[in-house]
Image (tube, rainbow, N blue to C red; front, side, top):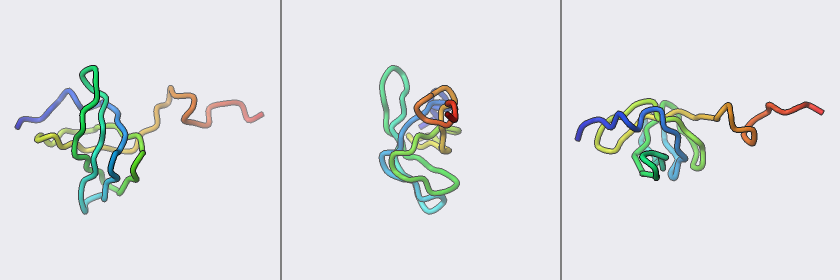
Length: 83
């Protein structure tokens, strides 16, 4: 199966944590108006529930991901007033 270029740049949430180079996890990616599951590979292990960014497609429903926090998501960060 060819690479799925449409998935690159999409975000998703890990359903199963990755193990770095030791093995993939599983990510649910928001794509094409819905959500699709892919095997997810990462450079370092990432835990279940982490938001990730798809940085490459390996084909055969496998993608490379990195941890991601949306800079526009106010609930995710320390961008508010310190008080």
